[in-house]
Every structure is written in C-alpha cells, then in structure tokens.
Length: 308
Image (cartoon, rainbow, N blue to C red; front, side):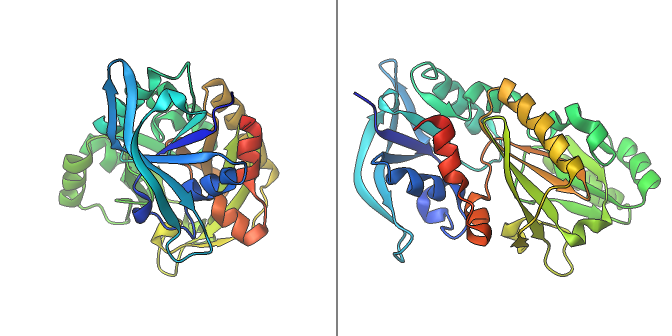
C-alpha cells in the first residue's frame, strides 16, 4: 500500500505568510493528489522506543479562505509512516536545527527526506560557497577584526553578514569602518562573511530555483528605495527575469554539484552576474512568488521530480 502522508517540519503555520510561503504552496499542490499533510515543529520531535515520533496535527490548506489552514486532527505520528518529510523550518542553523537532522537521519532509509538531513548538516549555506569563489565578489570569512579592517580598506564599501542567519537579518553595509560596531557584531555572531559591495544591487538580484539537479526558474527581487536588501521580507519587489548565459552556466554547475550532495531543492542568488554566496538548502523559498508573477508552477515540478 502506498503511504499517502507527507510530513512538514516547520515553523507553525500561524507564523507563515500564505501569499509568499513556499511550504504552504508545496503542501497545497500535493493535497490535490490526495496526500494528507502532517505538520509539526522541531521542538515536538522525539525518539521513543526507537521510533521517531512527532507531536503535531493533520492540516488542510486553502488559499481561498481568510484563515488559510484548518487543523483536522492533533496527534502523535510515527514519522516512518510518511512517504516524504520536508524539512522546512527557517534558520538560524543552531543546535536545535542540527539535533533535528540527527534524529531524522535515523529514519532516512525508510522515508525520503527533503533535503537529506546529513546533507543539510554538511552544507553550511554561506561557507559552502567557498567552492565557487571564482564566481563571487571578493569575499572573506573571519572573526579577526584586523583582517576585516584590511578587507574594508581595500574595497571602501563592504557587506558583512552572519554565517548562520537568513532572510537578510543582521546584514549590514559598511561604508565607514566603525571599530566598536564591528566588535559588537563579531561578539554576537563570531565568524562572519564579508563581501565587496556590489552597487548594482539597486537593480535587483536574481533568485534561481534548483530542483533535482536542474535549473528550473528564477525571479528578480528589487530592493525598496534606499535599501540594499533584496529579500522580500525586507520589502523588495519581485519581478520576472531571465538568466544570462553566465548565470545559467554557473547555476548548472552548482545544481549538478548539489545533486551529488543529495540536495534535492535549493535556491541560489546572483547580483550583477556574481554569485552572492548564499546556497540556500535549509528552507529555500520563492516558488509561490514565481507562480504569482509568471504562472510557472514549480510545485508541480517539485512533486513530479519526487515521483509523488
């Protein structure tokens, strides 16, 4: 008998925005194939009697209603009963995140998990980009203030960002070197990523969607006036786009590499044809936005590639 349950490990649906959230978009699509959706938060994951158990609820999503989700039934579920498990909680990539990957790895031979828990653990979203530094703006990773100062003096304007954050949070543009600000930033975040600032970000970045080793689509995100952040959560506007030959070639290389690493679904970003150094594997987003502006439904592609 085919298992018709898909579990989503993520932040509670009440915290999600249905107009842009990819988890809801994926769930809504697979509901039409008569799959049941079981939803739980990482904090409710346990190992009991050698079984991976999650306390959560079966849920139905409906875009046409003001309350876009309905809890059908609360229960505890043995996750080995599922056909697929989607790891979809947002970073920070902290010890809770890491621990949940170890727990899910225990059943990874019984259930297909997207993305593979050990692969999520092994691929630091920013540090992994070191493999592609020739495609990126000049970047360093450090917690040494003197190294960062030398880097700043060379480029006069740099971007600094935490290695394990997401969504543009705590990303700063430095145009004047403030020793105290950098010290506080390092104390809070330890190792950070520093990049040469690319002023053409005002024209937007490009988010590229990689599914099962294939380049499947892209959107551009234009920062709001006065901002350098292209994240939609920071007010950026999504628009249709096409990849240049350079962007497409780089995307194909990364897509192929990620498939070898057992990463099924990822998002990468370009600014001015330069890879910006974020290889999004923990909870890639943007599929609902792509559909809204182009009617290209990559949720169908996602499940088709999984043979759901």
